[in-house]
Image (cartoon, rainbow, N blue to C red):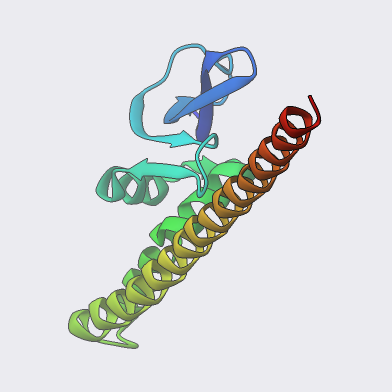
Length: 154
């Protein structure tokens, strides 16, 4: 049986939500699956990915082939890097501690990058809100000036 790690679509029309599952390659996209290993929500910015690392590693070691999108998600969460380091440990290229240290360094850098994106989005949203408030304030002042001109003219 050929096993694939793939996305299973859920959610309503125009608002997708995906489960990341290990499934037989012959089963339908939203059909039977062997194990649910995570979720992916592309509607948030940045996208929300919850993944069971141990289950994903287990299935890939058993020979499951991830689809292109799932491979990207696994790479984003560091699963593929962890597998690569695990193979290096098995070959004797580095020790378990060195592999874990490299993974933690990568993880800190990735989290910092994600946090900077979130901060940038928050700052952009706040500045947009401030510009809208300032525009409304100017409009309000213009309306009050027009009312004053009309009331003095009567």
